[in-house]
Each structure stands twice: as C-alpha cells, then as structure tokens.
Length: 247
Image 1 (cartoon, rainbow, N blue to C red):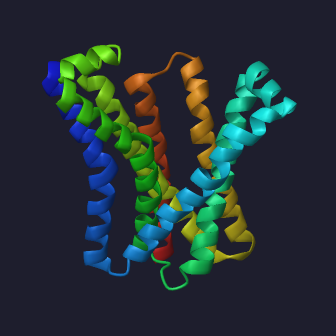
Image 2 (image 1 turned 180 degrees about the vertical axis):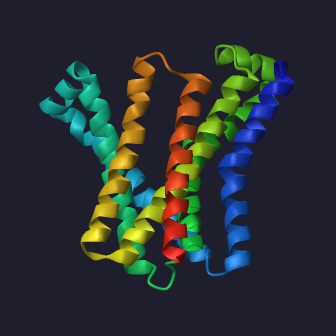
C-alpha cells in the first residue's frame, strides 16, 4: 500500500487501535459479563496517576537534576534501560494492585481484570499514539498526505502502521498483567506478593528489553514480533493457570 492511501490507512488503523479497540472491548465485556465499566475507568486512572502524574514528571523534571541519574543515563545505557523498565513495572503494577485491592472488592473476576487492562492500556495508547495520529490526520487533510510525508521525512503505510501494532500488543500485555495482579489480590498473603513481584519483573523486563534489542539492531517488525512472542507466552501461562484452577 503506497502513497497517500497507505498513509491514511495507517492513520485510521492507529485510531481504531488506540480509541476503538478499548471502547469496543469494554462494551462487549460489559454486555456479556456486566459490571465492567468501573474496572475500565479505574484501569485508566491507574495509568494517569502512576505514569502521567508521578513517574514521568520525576524522570523528566526531577531526576535529571541529580548527578547519579545523569551518570547512569550517559555512561551506563544498559543500567539506564533496566532502571526505566523496572520503575515502570513498579509504578504501574503497584498502582494496579492498590486500585484492585481498595476499589474493586466486588469486581475481581477475570472479565474485570481484562476491562481494567483495556482501560489502562487504552489511555496509554490514546496519549502516546492516538492523539498524534489525530494530529497527523488533521495535517494530511489540511496539506495533503504527500506534503506531510515530506515534512516527516518520508512517511509510509508501514511506518505509520507500526505505531498501532505496538499499541495493540501493549494493550494485550496490560490485560495480561492486570490478570496477574488481580490473581495476586485474590490470593493475598505470600502467594499474592510473589505474583505482584512476578508482574513487576515481567513488566520491567519487557520495557527494558526494548533498549537491549534496539542496541542489537533489532527494530521494526522484528521487534514487534518479539513482543508478540512475549504476549503469547504470558497468555498461555495465564490460560494454563486458569485451567488448573478449574480442576
């Protein structure tokens, strides 16, 4: 798919993933399982609080003023990627667990966890890719897609499509991490803390590995394929655990 048509197709794909997928997903869950709207908005709130209001301002405005952070960022890239990944895991999984423990005492089913993940990943997708896709669409309408492609260094369907694919996989993994933290809250005790730690670790590894893979020259669809494998492995593990609980 080439030219202006390809760019428009990529933009609409991104918009569908970032806005349509979370909205349609929670509506379908609510129609089939009921009581899924509250978890959806709580999921969105946890991303807003943990990342937008706390972690991102700290990383962008507070930590750069410290010598150890500048040293880590400039001289130790591998440690820096691990730091970014693990702080994301700690911030988001802790907020997820707290929201489920305090505000979802009557919403602790698997569909509630899925709706929670849709809200969390959906807001992240809307802020990181959805809004920029809307801006890109407006620019294409105003100046033509060919002009905008030149302005952004040669946009194509593949380049634009990649953003939506990344967000699709991220939303899926947020649903899986939400299921893990939901099970942690339901179990409580030492088992619950271990599951929370596992969710933090997996989240941190996934985020940190972006830098590791890119430094090894793995980018584009190959990198997204690796994240699809991550999501598939976590999904299979969750399904196996769920089937064992039914026995």
